[in-house]
Image 1 (cartoon, rainbow, N blue to C red):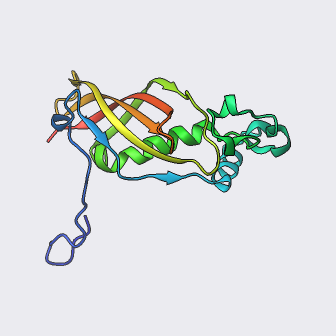
Image 2: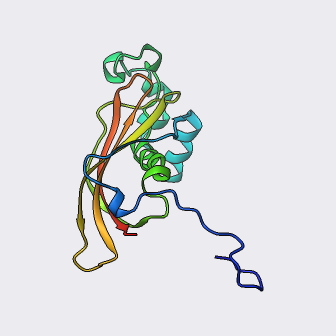
Length: 172
């Protein structure tokens, strides 16, 4: 915190995330942030991460994408597929305000990541999180380990990403 000469907090931090005790198994959080992804997002992320896969960048190659691949969205035929690592990062990012903002000590890892349907430029994604499990930390009495399942849906309500992760969370 920044303090003035009178030792008062000038800029107190505000944390919105839930603490370990609040993250009870079965809790379902529907996240308020949504995002329409753009071709620019896809190209920038793909280039930024040094992934030159033509399936993300090459419109000519993408002309062969079919409605079967796209999940039936006729407007998706012939578009490059979105980089799935962007989809995963966006999903976790959309979950932060209501779930883990300021209360996460560390992301411990992902035990499962699935991409059941592709994402295309122009899709609008929304997210929810379900608390699957939690346990006390054996080595850190002020923290606990929570297993979260994050799910991203497109504008048709189709699951486009499902990620199960373990996070070290602060206790109150």
